[in-house]
Amino acid sequence: MRLWRAFSLAVALMAPLPAAAQMLEFEALEGWQEDDHAAALTTFLATCDLIDAPDWQPICKLAADMPRDEASARSFFELFFRPVVIGQPPALFTGYYEPELNGSPVRTPRFAWPIYRKPPELTESQPWHARAVIDGGLLAGRGLEIAWLDDPIDVYFLQIQGSGRIRMTDGRVIRVGYGGKNGQPYRSIGQELVRRGVYTMDQVSAQVIRAWVKRNPGPGQDLMNHNPSYVFFRKLSDLPADKGPIGAMGRSITTLRSVAIDPVFTPLGAPVWIEKEGGAPLRRLMVAQDTGGAIKGAQRADIFYGTGNQAGEDAGTVKDGGRMVLLLPIDRAYALLPEG
Image (cartoon, rainbow, N blue to C red):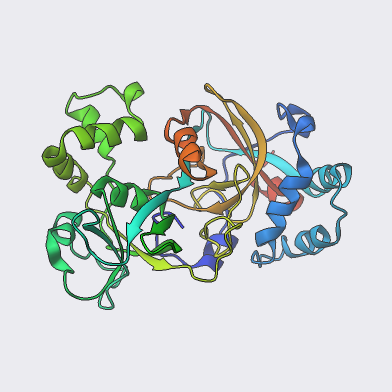
């Protein structure tokens, strides 16, 4: 899960949403009829049993018994939900992915940058040492290394993505997921490059940042240290190779069907209709199954693009507007509307 803030999952699932809302008809959702609702239902069912709010429980039970054909799946969403816009569009959509990296179980001249499991003394509710201190050798010699990577920028972006697959020199492939963080605030190094006048906001992408750090290794390390937030990992030894990484709900997420949201505005597990503009527009029903340290606001979402280099290329350039529409149980949707 991605830069997950410590919070009670039960509270996040059941918390009331802000009152400002606009209800729509399904006919107002551009591309709704053309989507694969059966695929969306499958993703919804992957975490639906974790939503224990009273108005969700009957819907989840019905979903489990629904036929998986397209007509039945679409009817299910149209019968039991209402589309609601929370907040004020335009939305901001970005993308994330699960990297595939090379690594070593031991330090070598090539593989010299560690990823760590969480130190036992760290309590996430209290700020701990910043990135610069940790990267300066604070944890060296304590046996907390999970693997060693061959590029510090790979370590940084692995922390941003929150999960990954590491192909070890001994032939094994290990999977790692979010294991904790140091309690420091997240600061965007892309925005810092813009502040310094290196790039304009429309030029910044993950690929551009990576290339700049590689060209400027000393200043690049200083740039990464601008973000004091630091993520620790854990091995996911029982996660099948054909499953996606683990999201904030503790289950695997699905390529182009799972989205990271701000749980203050969007309940985890809820269906979310995405109308993303940009060079590769999307009109698709997704499910809010993840969170992120940089994902703040009602009209803010991070789309999971899958695993590997191509997914990284696709995700790294996404910074698009559009509209995000939440699907809520009927009674909950009407309760959000202003009286009168």
